[in-house]
Image (tube, rainbow over all chains, first blue to last red; front, side, top):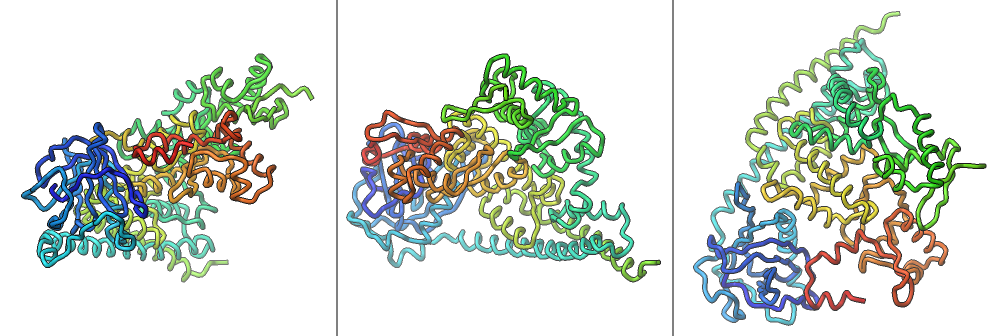
Length: 371
Length: 240
């Protein structure tokens, strides 16, 4: 912590703010620094920290002081940290909060997260070294010298080896996956060209292989759909699970609402957006009492089949006639629906010629169509 | 007429081959997962590299929760849960910003909602989660603005004209008809048409009492400016 100097926190002419993060506590080596929580700011030239309660308390350090830095994962009760290893302070360093430190590293503890972005930007700035192109008026002493090389922790070598090993293993998996992508393409083409006696069953099996691998195949999707046994099962589960929520919400829910509802209920082994969509597409063929519907605007909803179109339009017309005119927000309040869906109903009624609109900057208002 | 036996046999053989390869792949992935699963969850950099590699070969590890990648590496749950959190934040703020929010603000609010003990997420993670949400309709999209993005979560139609005005408004959080005419060299009608559309969609608010001429504020950008920690000097530069 003795590498920091007091600062007024103002940026110099050529200095730009890169990122800032609240909720950062500083450590002098492994010890908590005698400072409170603050905001850490990274500029093109310096690492700055300001006390969140006392804005006068602001310290800065040139980025050239940094030898290297690494992430330290958090745990239960411990925040994630970035450990920053530093060159020795130069002789002409301006005074700061610490005269002396027995450590040559500091830590930034991210109590409100944000360490990933901060780390990423710090990496960028340390790679680009933009401060070298535009030196600023304050003397920013660089910490170079024969000591620099030797203070590099041995840890780096170990880290680099682990990264390399991991990369090799990932490469191996990816190249295996690649082989299968190619194989799957040639099979898909055979299915398409109807070459060979591939049975219905085998096609279904093939689609489940594609699903496991995450390989999209537009060829089979056109002719056979994206659904698999898994999606059929899901569709049935959804049929059961969504009855009550749909009835509570006037018979209709946006697909994004369904996604949140279902995944919050599951807690783990969540559905992907595509899983949900593919399952919903099977409602009709499985004769379930739900339907997936896409409005002109692109909004997708799940609706109870019992909820006929005529009923919806009639109810929209009734409500609008009753009140003289309605906006989507007002209609939403009346029915207890989301604004998005109530707007879709009004648009639908308009499309069928029962309502007409008054579109102004004050909003979109619907009236019964008397023409 | 009989189909050539040769063609049929080859296709079936390939399918059997694929089935076998799949088994091998699955067990290799299991081994990989046992060593690196934690890291995928903790290292944003690893996630990025991994996804990019998958993309180059045409594999989408996030396509299904039932996929191997998701089941064994757990990548799926991480992103699908993030998707839920993104939807919820956007919904909660829609009445204020009309369904448009900066990626920065979305990031901060998602982090806050996840709480202290949850895994950190990067902006790249958010972007990937949003890309997945697109398939569910509802107009999730991203508009490049000032070096970052605006995230759109409603099906409001925004064409090139709207986008470029949003980009113009990014610096101060608001824009005027004169500024549009000067910077973009548009006719007044075109500028007004675009601004009216933004007003109607609830993406812009009109301050007709501003000194000089009317200002069109974008709450999506406005809240970012006021909630950011600013130094005294920056604050002086910002007040008009």
